[in-house]
Image 1 (cartoon, rainbow, N blue to C red):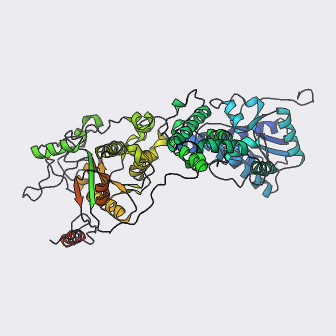
Image 2: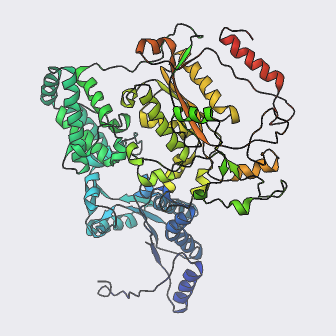
Image 3: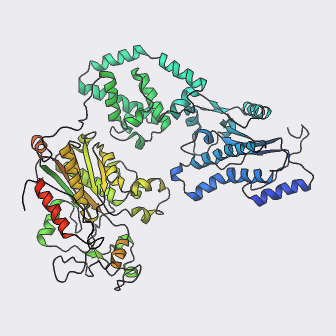
Length: 627
């Protein structure tokens, strides 16, 4: 077609991101007597990858063609009198794309470059394209999913007509896309409103139509039928409806594929399928449902309960903070769970170890891959070395039944073993108290965890391909308590704290305060320690704080330091009056506790005797006791 119009088309290979290559190409054109009149920069590197899973190397690789190529052309043709300087961008550069993080950023740069050229008097047009019909081969992206989202495949002739209009009108920036707003707008705004689209005529018209429309007959029929049922039957009907429609949205043939207590996100829902489920449920019930429904009520049980409130008008309310009898009310320990060195997997086994006076100190566990021989040096001043390779270790720290908790193997690998142990022991604490863990979902149960070591992320950063997206939530300290609260659906405080050796006791103190104030109705409290690297041994060796033989000898003349050890221990606590009313076994009673700091002692890690005496007296006073 170009030849028929009298043009000469020549294809030349050139890496547009290589400045020298671009300069050489332009120099060759000039040498042949050709003057560059128009530039169309269409290069792209598309990567289906969320920004959170993209490292800097990969980010640079994706944006290179767009950014470096455009920058080189802009610089090298700065003095040229061009009729057109056209930059091919994408809708991803205008409103973003969760699946194309780096690609979105590269396209956004093109828009900024066009504005900069215009500001200095040079021509520039950036065209943010939708999807052309010729783009159906999109790799891992399902074309049908794109169509369901509301992005239509454009006829190339219509797309080129849009380009011609942009050039004729000398536009700086425009978007050319075929969008079915009735499908696309709900998907895009499923998590939060978008002022970008709010004033578009098609969107405004859809909003008015949605408010005016409403299947009143469907709603009335569904409400009448549901209200006629007994409460238990209402719950079952709505839960079955949610699971059935959720399975359909995900492409499953049976509702059995959607577990009633599994988070929609974990089941495979994204913004598109969330809107699809909302629409299906709205059609089935006649109700007007929010686009954020799946995010606000994140599993079938919670969503079914929400639907019940819309139909029946009442729900079983989650108890809010309650007034309590007194701030000094005793706190009952109603269950314990633990993992400690020496195979102590339950409190009874820990008692057996203590009663027998067992010694469970051992060398570095060989399965962790620590080079004990290379790390050891008897000289306490040797940098990077330790004069003790002994400690109390959890040999089973890496063991975890991920599927039991609905966690994928990849995410489990990225999870700090401390998180895994807390999930297991939290479950056991509820069970040992005679409480079904499913019944505490939505309750004001607090989670208070003491922890000092968060070095797992640095130890496994490069261990598994594709694990980067889980490393943040897998290794930060806040998620130690947060993951427990998330998995069990606990809505009381979730606090991770580090006060060094006192962390677990302070966690228990805060749990007691939360219970007495009415902030929590039940609380998990305790601490966890698993050391992912031998760095603590090296650091404490420099301070000469380690016992050379791996044994603490408190109050003995032979005392020469401490020994590091691992473990996890949790208690489930409740106000004593509640424990008695609920029929829970009371293992022990906490009548008072107190917290202070050593202040300006004889060193950062040195104790302060008078300060510790004061905190003991404060705890006794809180319990109504005297020394």
